[in-house]
Image (cartoon, rainbow, N blue to C red):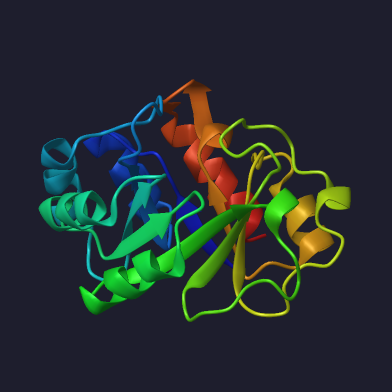
Amino acid sequence: MFVKVCGLRTAETVAAAVAASADAVGFVFAPGSVRLIDAGAAAPLVAAVPEGVETVGVFRGQPIDEVLRLARAAGVDTIQLHGDEPDDHFVRAAAAGFATIRAISAARYTASGHAGSERLLIDATVPGSGAAFDPADLPVPPDADWLLAGGLRPDNVAELIAAFGPSGVDVSSGVESAPGVKDPARIRAFIAAARP
């Protein structure tokens, strides 16, 4: 099970995620997020991530030139676009050498509505809310590799993996002690629960 821990902002929590065998760590560059980090602060955190652990920059509704500038400055491997970005943004990100993740809410997903080479992340109906994912929101999960996100916590991730059969999971608020404040113990517990 691929596990991404997102919204990291400190060396301690990046180290905790890596030590617990996270496959990817995410940094949020979307204005207005309580997990916002600037590229200058993210760069040394990204540089400390060992080879083999993916680094992801998360963006929402930003101009693609700004996305590419911030991603380059931070040094991330992957660009995750979490809004209604056009296909061209993914094409440009890929042409610039980044892997891509297309993040959409369950309410916008249709089984036949995803095309393209980027990976797919399906979030709860209200992305970023931390609200628990309702299986009724996703009656037909994708049949290709995809990540489940939204309301995942150490105490429910195993159940939701069993219900949906994703190839990976993405957690942010579910491993926090307060909004935007990651808890190393919760990170460890989440990863252990996702890979029983």
